Length: 136
Image 1 (cartoon, helix red, strand yellow):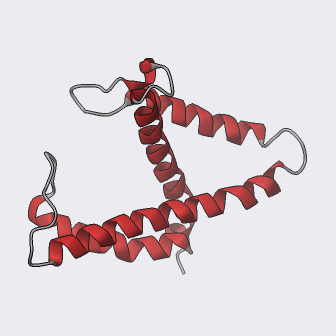
Image 2 (tube, one colour):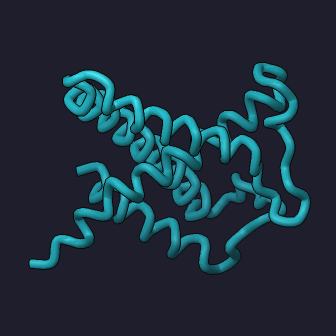
Image 3 (spheres, helix red, strand yellow):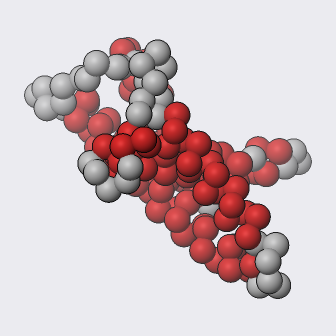
């Protein structure tokens, strides 16, 4: 049995944690909770590059700090999985809400400036199927 798909789950969980952390950092900086330096968004790609770098550095620093002390790996293994589970659960709830709103006959959801168009619903269904597998 090929174990690559299962061994890639922690990698993907870390990517989603960094992505959501960078968006929260960007929003927090935009609201005045952090310096405005982190609220900058590149106009070409519309990505909060500075807050993304901050989230990556925080993640790398946390991993580097595990080498200090003997119980670091055990503590990390206890703390991180519930956060990843909560993140995927929050994504699944949001995606299910969007799908329910799209499948209703009454127009309850207006699309923003960026949309997947007709591919949006199939991508959301695949994401809902993937989320429980990633949570396990």
